[in-house]
Image (cartoon, rainbow, N blue to C red; front, top):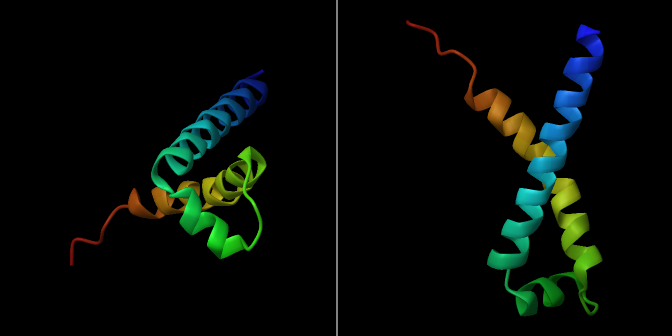
Length: 72
């Protein structure tokens, strides 16, 4: 039961992070700049792809940032 609870919590946390990264990309990435970078007209799927790629990076960055520092 504990493994199921942790799995569901992790999936929910990743889904929330994906939604937040998607919203941030949609709000803060200028569509003209994004379109000139990917060289085709953009749609919501492109922003979703961007969020899908950025979500694991955010997870790793958060894990590395929360690691304890050495006292020395």
